[in-house]
Image (tube, rainbow, N blue to C red; front, top):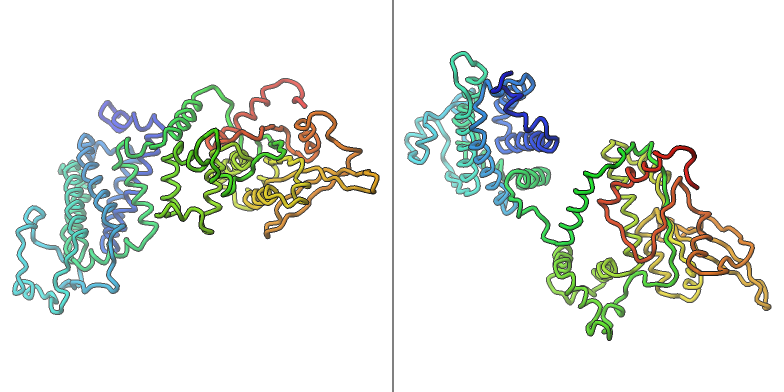
Length: 507
């Protein structure tokens, strides 16, 4: 209590959910990093220290045991430690076999009688070490390890800053216990700070540990990156993020759980527009542009193109049309033009968004898969897919590629079967999906009373596929539109606008 208590000092963190979350994440990741860097030798001391700090936090007595105004110095040293590890762990080449370690002269861990301030003056004297009963024979007496020495220096500075932050009053036994454990941690002879082999082996192990590298990268991004380092370089990415964040402050209904949200379908009419650009389309020089379509897109989206080459590790741009990268190149170009692939991939972000939200609600995979079929569906009404298939049009293959890429996508088309030479035909509305094994499976075939295309083709194309839609709401999207993942996250909120109505829902 009081103006100097935890409630006052940490008020700006307690009252801000983002800051509170960041501090909790920093504590968890930082604790993981220190435990893994120091290793099993120091595990007991690390557990005891973190346990006391958690106890202080639970009882709101941190400010009684530590001078919180000095936390900036502690963080600065911690950032230097994280930065050193981030730069060195990824480039480290671990030893193939464990190094020879120093065995303490007693069954109990021994402490070095050398202060941290005089470490640089310590001389390697073989006779004095023999007197301490250290085994020093063999070819690997001195282990040269720059990352180990740098990590020790940063860790030493961090520990000293933590000790300087603690209030070492005579009546505060818990603070003195933390100080004593930190001192012991820095001076134990077979620990990280003194045993070269132990420290080097510990870093070797971490350099092979992918989980540690991921945690280290996350921690480095949390504490050691400047705003300019983490902001997207792409102007389009900044625009989308800015719009999304600003939109969260508008008055919108609260989102229900995945179980309770309204179900909805999306319907897109398609005739014979481009589905996925082929090599010939992209290399063809057009009169309007004066250059090839691909060159135009590479120039217009230069940053995206460089990211594409880096993501696929393409060092030679001529390799983009190799068998390995051709499909990815076609998709990259199609997603930046008015193609069916762009529309479908954008609309299928609804499914990805719902899966992410289901994961946040801790739903298992089987439950999530069931809910996806219940809450969302996407149908593309490809009116002349049947004719394209009969004529071996490449667009039919591209449409099938879409079904294989997005298993929950459904394709509807009008199938006309000729009955006799006089030209009489019977018409069907057909619904297709991928069978998950590289083939196409017919789900429904509904006989129509006649040719459904009586007037304008686009509304009739939608009408015949309407019977295959499910859900409480239907969203119609034109072929030249796209969707954003971040906007798809708000679909649950948008659907709740209909829950405000009095009376029956619109049909």
